[in-house]
Length: 294
Image: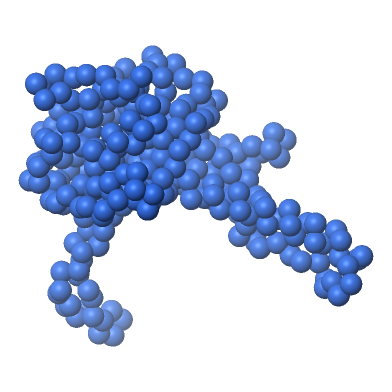
């Protein structure tokens, strides 16, 4: 049902790898997904992809303050006798890898309330992407429609730190082999009202299948490969069943849940892109397509 659509989507869906190095030397790596929108290199992804970067900025400021405090300790009356130690979990280095080597992101806009981020890849060669997405007409979305989700779950990446270049190193990623789809239906449309600044309506598409870790920022699409929504969250819906099971001789009550996906609705995506002047291909009422934006 989705074979042709998955082929289309694999052209404009790419992994984003986030590497962090911590004060205690620990290195952590996570993987998400982003969607390349147009030949100018504009992309969208989940806003929470930037959470570690925000923490890194805060940790860097704290480290500078602690360094200044320790440097002035000997001349400050009442200063502690021992230097203040840095938290071992503080992030000392941070890196994004945006699907291609040597590519960085600029013009970044993050709306954490919507859980959406927009940015532009530089440098970017439009020939890297053989087919760009079409955003569905929001009026054509209906609960009960078959949809599919795609992204990069089950990707285990071990990064290392190169002291000589002060940079992270990650292994080569076989992107086309690792992209993973899972299908379901559009169950409900969730309306969370407007953002605090009133600029955007917080609309989301709920799906009967859960989003998997690593699919955040990836597309939810129809059988034609058109963008329906962007995966951002998995919700756990309690079923009200509480069966008991035995583990190692102990009786345990298990709460039963249904896991459903939640994606930023294409209506909200289009509103954000319009506000940023980002061009995209859109579905027309007459069945064709048009280019929206500059």
